[in-house]
Each structure stands twice: as C-alpha cells, then as structure tokens.
Image (cartoon, rainbow, N blue to C red):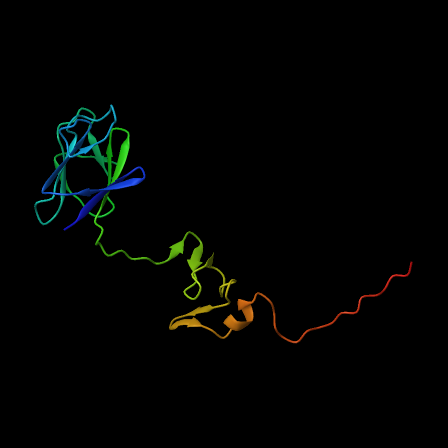
Length: 161
C-alpha cells in the first residue's frame, strides 16, 4: 500500500516499513521546527493498517486535535500536529465520495460550472438536473444567454425639442 504525508504545499511519499519524522538528520523526514524533537514521531507501515507513535517527544503529538497516547491506527485524511506543523496523512488510492457540492453551490453535470443549489436549473447552460441525469430541453435556449423566442418591439414616444 502507498501512503503520503502532506504539509505546507508539498507531499512526501512514505516509503518503507518505518518512517521517522523529526528535526534531526536521523529521521527519514526532516522538518526544521525548533518545537520538534530530533526523533518526534514514527509511522509503522509494515502491518495491514498504518500506525502512528509518538517517540517520547518533549512537546507531544496531536492526532485529529487530541493528544496521542501510545499508538494509533491511521486513516486517510487524519491530521497530525507536531510542534507548529500540521501534517495530513493520505492514502492516495482511497475511494472518496464526491457529492460535488461546495457550501450552497452545486456543480452542473452538463457544463461543470458551479451555481446556487437553490436554483432549479443551471444559469450558465440551462440544464435541469433530473434523477436520470440532465434534461436538455432548456439547454439550447439558455446556452447563448439570450432568449430566442419571438421578438417584441416597443415603440418609445419621441420627445420634441
């Protein structure tokens, strides 16, 4: 199984059966943080489930905002705080559900543009979400952004100077 560790704007592959993280050069992953011990935490990747262990560090370790005592089994997305750093444990092959919603937005399945989930149809392409997918009956009308129905002319009164 493959595992990764994300911190700041980078990701590191966790290779081997054991990975030690700390500020010293003795570890496999070195993080320059004075709040870390030289050998702060250890990932045990040899078994069927990955585990995390604090190596009697001076400032301790938190797993998902709780103090880590002894060993803990890790799962995808677990947050690990050591020193001033927050690390995220990742299992790249983990199946993730994506409901494709963001706050009050829904992504249109026809054009992939986000729109308010309270709208009955996508304001960008006019697609109407249905249980079978997307109805295209309105799409041609709204795709151009203009109503293509019969035009109505309005006669405005002329002003005399």
